[in-house]
Length: 158
Length: 158
DNA sequence: CACCTAATTTGTAATCAATACAAATTAGGA
DNA sequence: TCCTAATTTGTATTGATTACAAATTAGGTG
Ligand SMILES: [Mn+2]
Ligand SMILES: [Mn+2]
Ligand SMILES: [Zn+2]
Ligand SMILES: [Zn+2]
Image (cartoon, rainbow over all chains, first blue to last red; front, side):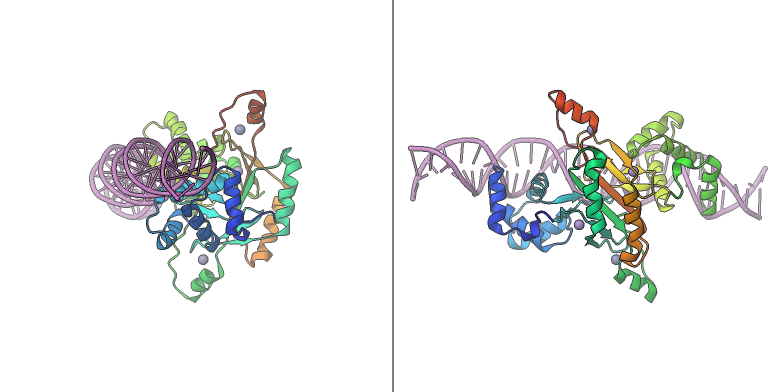
């Protein structure tokens, strides 16, 4: 566990921006706050959430800002084959458990993942820059629906 | 190591198609052969390679076929944030080591990954359907270029 | 505080990988 | 050999993301 966006205060976040020579704009601060409250959101989800607090914001700003945050290493962009990226605020070694039915993503923290991550430095001869570990498994909610009877198994994110 | 596309003979591959009720068309066989010879190719790369052997093939067929192969579980589609999927013929537990400079992807087989994969069944309460483990690290070729002098660090696939 | 300017934001147009669709072709069973 | 559902093809369309230029603004200077 190094440093997670969820645990940054607004002041700490502003320091990070300033340290790298970026301005602390209200748009950036709002996107930061919204990211704290969402779980692996898409750009569109972030946009919709932010328009409530900041109706004039542009979708372009959302994208620019998400890319900036990625560069700063405080979020991780996850591309999917449906061409809608989702953004992970957890940059520590962990597994994204993805339900192929509903698309829900939940984090699984695991000692073996940390061990694997730590072992990669000597296996690769250098410390890797970042990781993305995904595993697909039907979630309990969807499993129950399937058991209960009919479900429209419309596979997502695969 | 279960069953890898690279090791299927054409006959075995035809059996797989027939077993699932799909026709063994020349297009499918050619795409199968090309997949064997490429490393994590994009749809476009596959298309270009196949046009040499099969000039009349349609890009739509490439996509349809790749999706079919994904459904059959013999390849894995890897979505990236640049919106160009790449296709992995290695469906066994392994790590894709991705160079953020040149975009090269190489497989890293590792005992810890197998152990992690095996452990997930009890941690999740069910056997996961598939996985995708990516790690980003600058490859030796790019590392050397960087050391040697000027490089245009144009980050890909991130 | 008022001013200045590079950085940032905004709105709109453009991109382009991927998909939808309907007509043409064909694998493989009868 | 014939038949038909499956498959392929070519073209049009989609839609998330990016490009771009004009408008706005954060934050430094005096
Ligand atoms: Mn995550
Ligand atoms: Mn691979
Ligand atoms: Zn689900
Ligand atoms: Zn490289």
